[in-house]
Length: 327
Ligand SMILES: Nc1ncnc2c1ncn2[C@@H]1O[C@H](COP(=O)(O)OP(=O)(O)OP(=O)(O)O)[C@@H](O)[C@H]1O
Ligand SMILES: [Mg+2]
Image 1: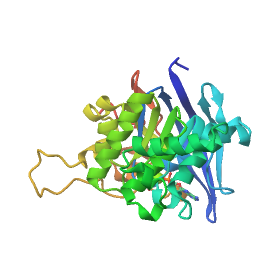
Image 2: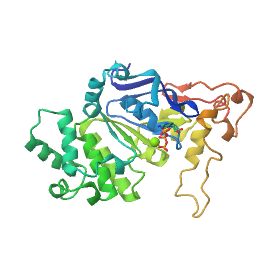
Image 3: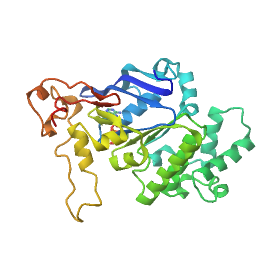
Image 4: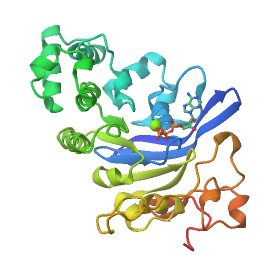
């Protein structure tokens, strides 16, 4: 493990028991996160982004979700092997998460202040009530909530969606985690609020040096905030590269498809946006060979029989496609 690597996910396999049988929502996923770095996890709906992050946090829905194999190393210690109480300490203290549904993640019957305070109390039990109250207001101020002294007394329904999301960020950041996992933190928000939240996360990161795992289906947002990108498709990694490399020379046809689906200013107005035809395959009925084959214009015989391995393009760029050298 390189010196500055903070978190390393190795060959993660996560499965769900469903009525129809077992599905592997995440299969053989590996990537690492360095101190102060932002890693983007990108892919269409159902590709396994949230399941990856819930696996890292060990917050999979019980009893049906289960990590079958792999390692999640934080400073070389495998979180998957920790006793539950030690894992509880890691959550919030070392790794925090902003969940995909901010509306459901806040408790409607408790004041905002109490909910931020709980994060402090849980993870810094030595803090007294007065300090917690003061710190909660300070956190609200840091995430850009106006009149924080007043807001701290309010209930979630009294806040707009954008403000609730800021409160979620405040809670996630309350204990100054080393790693923040942000699962689609801005998708439910309007564009100006999105930009503000992204700006906010970046400035908090500059100030604190925390690493961020940023989950989105929007490659445009990835370009704004990430250093490295992991592209997932149907539970597997399709491509992994530094952000400039990925945008300048995408190797996987799926990545190429995602990139051409980003609206561009230079295109004439009202031009139809490109999309990738077809849909992500059903995890219960995966084809033999490459999972992207039914949507891929480069598909050839080997793609239908052999699963592509994650191959090295260069020391930092990896792709999982039989034909990447020819396309
Ligand atoms: N509780 C569950 N029980 C059974 N299957 C699940 C469960 N949660 C997720 N899955 C399956 O795991 C796969 C990956 O889901 P995941 O939520 O990680 O997708 P995602 O990439 O986060 O998508 P989105 O962009 O929509 O959030 C999906 O096919 C989904 O059906
Ligand atoms: Mg998700």
